[in-house]
Image (tube, rainbow, N blue to C red; front, side, top):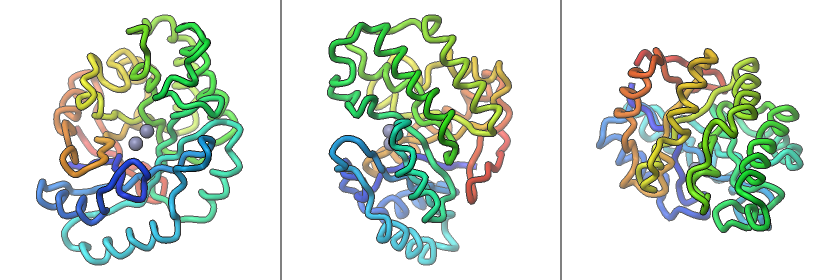
Length: 261
Ligand SMILES: [Zn+2]
Ligand SMILES: [Zn+2]
């Protein structure tokens, strides 16, 4: 099974690629399944809210047009924070999702990528606060499938590698909670494009999740153009197998389907 579970089309404000271009490319590279996961981020002036009606209309059109060539799933990447849960709850209840990636691009309504969240905090403080926001959120909101790029804070850390052991306690609380609630994590292959030294989440986290008996894991390229569609996904299937995973997951109507590695 070759599936890409993290893709942004021009319904996301940071991508110019029409959804149909991905479908054509997916067929070309023999993907069995593709899940479109455009952004909805609330908190940064609302600039990244998806045009929901047309989004689902376009997915439906493509599903019908390419029905005998590829399986297309409808997902979304919710850029979450605990205090915006009602907004997402409403969206979730209104539309028929197969899959939701819950990600944390902002904390305290401040972006991570431009360092406004980290500004004025020590490395220990912003790492701890980032994971606390995730933990607080999963305790009040459960309409999601997997946590996206769980240690995203590492990508935007100007002080260098923050040791896993310092965040281990809060990460354990997060992973234990999601396992108990039949949620999962994703392995996000954008770490290769960004030239990160480690995987995303890190190998430490991937091994720790396995150790805690975590089973639900999806793999996605986080593509913003067709060039990286499917990128490194087969390699990551092999990697997961090498550290003891037996399955990876795809989703249908919010239910995981397991595929042997
Ligand atoms: Zn993201
Ligand atoms: Zn994304």
